[in-house]
Length: 218
Length: 218
Image (cartoon, rainbow over all chains, first blue to last red; front, side):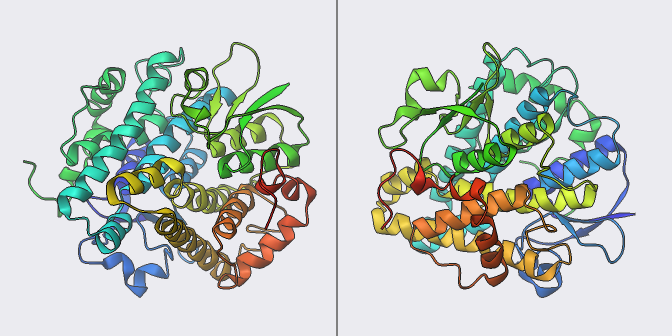
């Protein structure tokens, strides 16, 4: 049985939850509270020395698997159906690029350790931190919207007519933006695809606010 | 002929340059100045709507390929030798994870648009921005060092005894840190691998300070 270290609010864990759901893979979940600092405790940093979520363990005594996009590619290589990537190298490149914009260039900027730095070194209070988060989510979503709107490979989903790694990552950024009170109106192509993704149970039930420990949705 | 949009200082372009060199692929280079704002001009944003470097064009009229790690996977899929990833899914996951720590969680935090935000909204001058950059490079290198030092898959390089995507990305972060006056002493495993990489011509000649337009090394 796969074991995942996760937390309701972690957008990277959200991505891996969607992936596990799409592949139909059951997993044991262990909750690591980003609020209570569980990710900095030695029993977790010996698994994930970067002290970030998620981590996946696939077999006792094996090196833990870390980093959401790497884990999703692992799940795709070990459980090929349904595929997270198209078959052709150009398509795979495009899908991975969209995923990197959402996960790397966007989500990496809004994580607790970065907001902590802003608070400590620039005196950024909660509202200033939220503005920072909204700014970078909006920048990322704007870039993804531009790719989706102008490139012929876009279909019902980010690439063609089935969900890929790009949709999983885009959805995590779109949900993150909304959790910080952003709206998707300025990104119509993306918003349409987001809506289609959230009609799929594998996406819907993975939503941060539907996880154990999450606050009630406003 | 592959056409790459690049700039001496761009660490993401550095990664793709190493990849092209390792594969022995010639390319036409077009320089886009991050200093003069060339990445924001319409003739570039129609290729790369995110306004970031690099972009790769492989064939007239095709959708431009963006995002360094996605491009490197594309090069690996279209030109398999020498391989940038090991054969086994666990190994591929580990290599991709290390690459994401260096490129996504680290490099994404120090790019010009982020430093610009710090200047505009927090009044961060050049030295405060440099401190920010050193902090996030150090965090990323510390995490990579911990993985490299404690995991049995580490060899002469980050994963086994040949360079992979992990080495390409780690080297870009290590060079970035040094450009901001950081040193690698605190990361002995990583520093050893970095030294072995830089003995390889494909890595050495791709160094930012060896590119056209770069200032003389101090």
